[in-house]
Amino acid sequence: VGALSATTTATAAVVSAMFGYVGGAAHCNATSKGTILTMGCFSFFMVGFLILVRLNNINALGTEVWVALVFVYIFQGIGRSTFEGALRAQFADYFPEETEGAFANIILQSGLSSAVAYFLAYQIPWEVYTYVLLSVSLMGILGFWRASKLDKYHLQQQEDPARITSSDLTIS
Image (cartoon, rainbow, N blue to C red; front, top):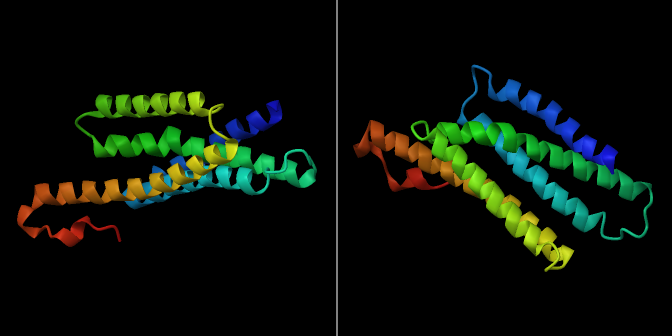
């Protein structure tokens, strides 16, 4: 178990450095941060997917199950690295005048969701818990791209209010 936990931490450290290089490059824009955040949400989706598909029969601990378990921890590390780096950078971009409030919002959301997950862990079957993880991961991707579109709309509205159309608010 300790080695698997270390796998998550090591993966998060390595991937965070890679994402930091890509996201911090001079040519970086909101789209590259969005791609990084989408990869993080997809990684959390894969955690649930692997648990649902591969680790369903936990009594038969063969090599295949252990390999799947290692990948669960690797995907968890990738998702964690995006939360610690790219997500916080994106919040700072969205709220340049209110960075303290933005980071407080991250802490509030993280703490609240962790508390809900903790209290529900033994109240609902693990399959339902896994489906919640899959759903929230996908909603995170859609929610991020919607927020990006709204932020772009808001910035365009500040520059030239007469130029904005309703098609600027649709996700493309």
